[in-house]
Length: 284
Image 1 (cartoon, rainbow, N blue to C red):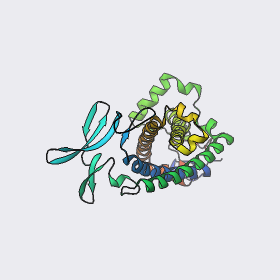
Image 2 (tube, rainbow, N blue to C red; image 1 turned 30 degrees about the horizontal axis):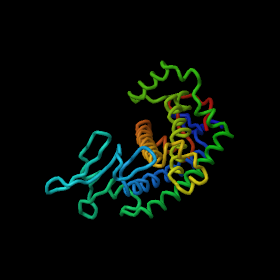
Image 3 (tube, rainbow, N blue to C red; image 1 turned 120 degrees about the vertical axis):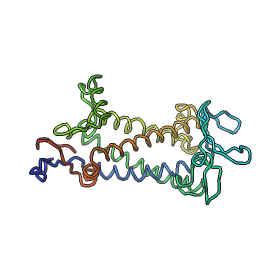
Image 4 (cartoon, rainbow, N blue to C red; image 1 turned 180 degrees about the vertical axis):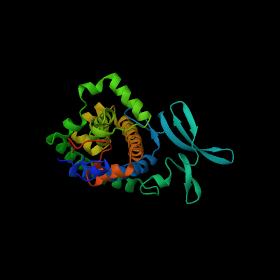
C-alpha cells in the first residue's frame, strides 16, 4: 500500500502499517487475554498449588503453592517456590476481602468474579477461551494466505547472526528505537518474540487447556501422554500464562517508551508516522 503524504512537510511521512484484520484481531486478543487471565486466577484460587505428574492432592508435594498460616496471634500469607518460601502477606496467600484478612491465592481485585466462585470463573474462562481460539485461527489463516508471517515476521538469515542480535539488544537496553527505513519493519527481537508467542506460547496454552478438560480427553487422550498428565498440563498452562503476562507488560512498556500516541494510532487506524524517513516502501 502507498505511503500517505500527510506529515511529509514536517519530516514525518506516514505509512499504512497494520491491516484492518491485524488491528481487529489484536484488540480482540487484548480483551480476551485480560478476561482469561483474571478468570484463570479465580480458577487457580480453588486450589492454589501446582504439581508435576498425573495427580495432585494435598498429600502430594507441590513445587509452587500459596497458603495462609497462623504465626502466633496473627496470620500471614506464604508463597512457596521449590525450597524457597516468601512472605507475601497482603497479596498472595492472604489478602483483605471486605476488610478482613482472608486465605486466598490471589487477591479479589485480580480475579473474575472478585468473590470466590469456581463455577463462575470457569464459565467466564471457557467462553472467552473459545472466542480467543476462533480469533486466533482467523488471524493464522490471514497470516498464511496474505504472506504476513513470511513478509513481516520471518527473520532474514543476516538478522540471526550473533553480532546483529547483540547490537539490537544493546539498542533496546539503551532505549534506542529504529528510525527512518528501519522503522518501517519489525526489528529482529520483535520478530523472534512475536514468532515465539504466536507459534509456541499460544498453541502451548491452548493445548494444555484442552488437556485439562476430561471431555476433550475422550477425543484426544494422547494429549495426556504428551504433557505428562493433567497436573503437568495445569502447571505448564499456568507458567505459559505467566510468560504471556510478562510479554504483555514488556510490550506495553515499549509502546509507551517508543511513542504511545504514534503506536496506538497505528493499531487503531493503521497509520504510523516515521521519523527521519523517506516515503518508499510500505508495511501491512
